[in-house]
Image 1: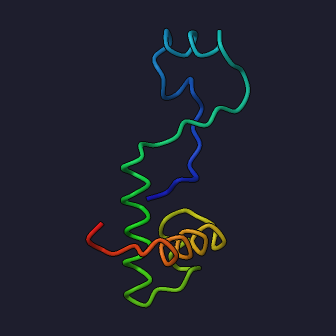
Image 2 (image 1 turned 180 degrees about the vertical axis):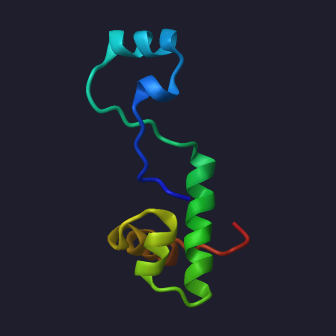
Image 3 (image 1 turned 90 degrees about the vertical axis):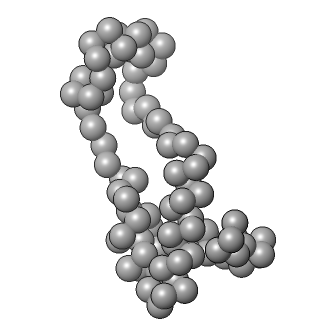
Length: 85
């Protein structure tokens, strides 16, 4: 899972959709993934930690910074996250 990939919109969008987007916005546009994707990613992070991976390794595997990995892990500890969720 790599969340730090970038693509040129003209290479991935149909021409008519690109024109529509350009009518509303020009510049760098971030398109979020679904909430489910975030939940799956966060579960993967917790599982990797439980299996002994360090934050740096997890960051490399998930495409996140070490800081973000640690934020996610700290959030899971304070919210009582379990693998059943």
